Image (cartoon, rainbow, N blue to C red; front, side, top):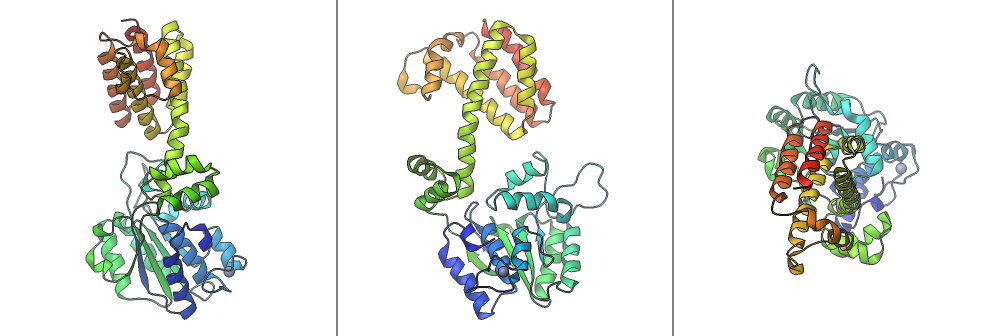
Length: 375
Ligand SMILES: [Zn+2]
């Protein structure tokens, strides 16, 4: 990965390139700052430069064997540590290498992602993830290996704040006694949660939120957005490219949510049980986070349709498609059923959070709508 994969942050790029040119690479650096500012992308570019056989002005050449291997996050001297979780029935604590395939897939897709996306990728949403003590033993073991290519050994630690205390103490020991040509890069969103003794062993580089214009340009180049749309999304992103991309996903999802809500209302009204069961299957196939967003969306639409009946347009917040739908649908949401429907949606959300079988939750909700809609 090259520095042009990192959005903006030019000063930091310059500083890291200078370290390589001058041959003064700190033993441990702490990249910290808000989510979505490019810390991990920067760490990958920096790692590439350190492992490149022929760096150009402190930047990776992009062509040598080292660069080709780091591009796949598969260089033998590049090691990763990130939060993982313990699968049911797994004996002993899990380590990052158990999830290296998913990690490489994620990096190949984009180095701009957050903790929640990572958990979704490795198939956990409601469970604790962390960096276990076993991981620290792995770090020591890997640092004791001779560098395969005879150069640097690079250790990228993503979200070190999620280390359990035993792991953190072991890492501290490693940082206190540098071994050979090793470069640690700690990538942290919340450095205030790290041990102060760890912080004092690192050189800190602060990543500031991106400018609205920088996010907008990245959205146009990387996500093929038109200028107007890019500006709009960038404004809502708080300087986080990761957040901006998530907003895009939400916009796409909302169109789908709307279609599914309309479909369910129609099917319930016509009592098409078999189709309703298929509807429930579709929603049940999603991840839980998305299911919860869908239920929130339904709540909003039910509330908006109820309000629509009062003909107070300044109290309504619906887009064009939703407003058109309300013209015919609003009369079905009234004072006799609005609280019943809202309660059912809240109950469904609670069930999803508590890991009740989503197929049951959504089919059950669909069936209740048959009764509620005609009240
Ligand atoms: Zn190279």
